[in-house]
Length: 378
Image (cartoon, rainbow, N blue to C red; front, side):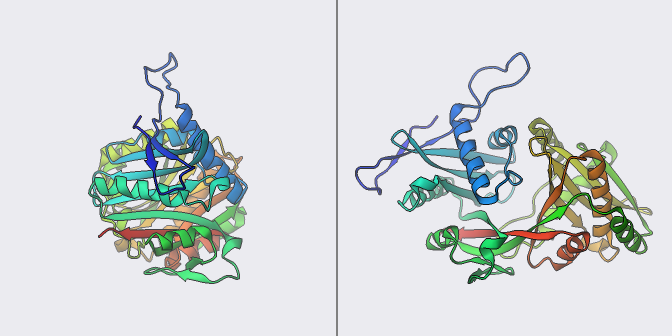
């Protein structure tokens, strides 16, 4: 564990100590093949859980402890650092920095969270200063961050418009004013939406019939958790395309480099995390080419919620209703596999009107807004 940093910008009577958090306890695995997380990591996770419950009243958007532990250990594609801040014996907040290692090596992801009772004392600025210094020391020149606000917080209030995307975030939200004051620009806004389950079967039947009329040259295939070997290379190519084919507004991101090893690493991480996945893809009959895919994730720790992950139709195969066709098929797969689930959460850029229209037709309703922020270092 790194030695604590002491920030002198706070009032003299307060000493803020920031130290890096080890995720796993040192030593070998237990007889069951498991290692325990550290007390400090559990403390950080508890702060995140409390924040999610206060903001949303549920943990639908929050990783479970096992998921979080897998994530923060990092991998060969992204290095991740988590820091815990204390005021004396009291926990004051956390911050984090992530470093892409394969591509986007000029960027860093930044996050800051202050315990509510310690807000408005300059601690957020101190944590942000620490995280940005870590990024600068690694030569990163573009910082990105995000945060999400509930739907009701954005209703009937003035909005800060996205710089290069569409929509905006409420100016009266503390996180918005904090980001602006720190020199971050709101590049893109995504809408989160929720679909109540089960979806009426007659609606799925009608949407499937309408979409199938335009997709006769495609077949629908699917799998759970691990991609079949014969589709693995094509699936990796789809995931690489996903990184830039979806709207990214003015965010300074490059195409991600996906190969079969990276797909397997992602799948194995999810399995170790206890996360289950359902994938449906569209394949062109004549060429065997994968043209579209969609992914849903379910976690036993939050059994009533499913999270929508990627959905992509490649540019050369658009216009055949493959987005709708794969989503309908995957919803059916998910409802059979996870009958306890009562909703699906998804996120779409405000400017992605085509995918939003598909979701609206399926019955998704707005649930919140997420801001994608960016700061370029001079």
